[in-house]
Amino acid sequence: MQATKHAESDPESNGADAHGTDAHGTSAPGTSDTASDAQYDFMVVSNRLPVDRCSPDEPGCEDGWRRSPGGLVTALAPMMTKTDGAWVGWHGAPDEHVQPFSHGGIDLVPVQLSTHDIEFFYEGFSNSTLWPLYHDVIAPPEFHRTWWDSYRKVNRRFADAVIHHANPGATVWVQDYQLQLVPKMLREARPDLKIGFFNHIPFPPPEIFAQLPWRRAIIDGLLGADLVGFQRPSDAGNFMRSARRFLGASVKQQQIHVKGADGKTTHIARAQAFPISIDVKQISELARNPEIVERSRQIRRDLGSPKTILLGVDRLDYTKGIRHRLKAYEELLADGKVSVEDATLIQVASPSRERVEHYRLLREEVEGTVGHINGTYDTMQNTAVRYLHHSYPIEEMVALYLAADVMLVTALRDGMNLVAKEYVTARTNNDGALVLSEFAGAADQLKQALLMNPHDIDGLKDTIMKAVNMQPAEAARRMRSMRKQILDHDVDLWSSDFLSTLEEKVIRDDS
Ligand code: G6P
Image (cartoon, rainbow, N blue to C red):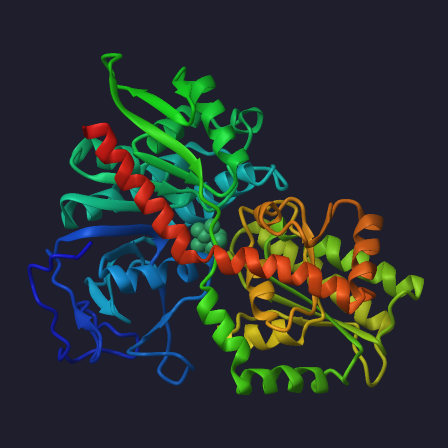
């Protein structure tokens, strides 16, 4: 799939500020312009573009932009570079118009979000309605008609950007819960397109999805796609049950017959699980890099060379089970099962959605608990929990994975959890233990992890101790088997599986 660029890029443009664009949205030196009428045969659409703004003195900053961290980006960036397609998404700055440009070999088509859109579409409907609803209502979802209105309008804007830039017959891959109406909007305007959608987060059972006042419109929006992908077979099953229940759709063997206003079948959408993975090559290479190995040793020395380092790495999100993990660890300290002399828990909590109330409350709670634990158990030399409210570049993350004897992934609900897969991939010596929640999608693939229910604090404590005391032979047996699973299923396979299923399906339907 090659992009047809009707206009050539201009790498020499000048006059930009530190953020890569000037007031008129022209590119910084080194970023190439992509003409605003360029057309593509392959387009990825996600709420965020795979870049963040940065200032030149920050590490990894090129021309005012930096490749952004996160599962979605990790998953799709390698494929975008290979296919020479275009990526449509929000550039992260409110109220700012940025012209299409190119960064790191990827053509980017920015979509503008106003301060109002951010409040109503992003923080509101996406992250205070859909996010909690799709994650087992761990926090109560809020339903506001004004938020829904904004969700529809912003989805329309993303769809229009694709409609403008897609070549006839192009393949369009829409990503995640923020953009569930885009597939239908594309199909209505451009029936020539091949449309795929992938939901990175869980899809709830119909009994929970039923709460959503706009449940029919969401299912209808998704059914605009030829192929709707999910992390787990149970997510695909939930979606098909909802399609049947709320739209009366006929569903047979993953095929959903979609009917138009006249009651006639317009097309058949397929729903299927495609568990996402990671860039195995990148993580493996970093894990073997002598500088990163040395950095991991330095981390251990900096912590006073404890016998055991435990590690948690999460966005600071209430779905991740950070409170449950801290509670279990505090009780282990109180029971004398672990001591600050022998063990340290490193908790990396990367800042996330900080203006949303539930996230603000979570931060206060987590930081209060960490302060309490450390105040009670720290000594002058040793600390119980090393809490880091930062995001780190992947190099530092891999050094942390190498330093950690035990990785704690205690999500209460998680679409996949790529941190678990990164940890396993980094353990090239087949040592280390992964404690993994059975409510993370990754548990479907990593069956040799120490699986547990994070709501069961005693069970969680026992599992942590089992990981701390695991004999090297058992650790190696488990790690080898998990590593094989991931090495055989990296992110390239995920994307090529999805795209070839989409192509085959469309060809079959047309013939
Ligand atoms: C999850 C979602 C992504 C989202 C990411 C970061 O992984 O599935 O769609 O981009 O979280 O969240 P944010 O709200 O910062 O984009």
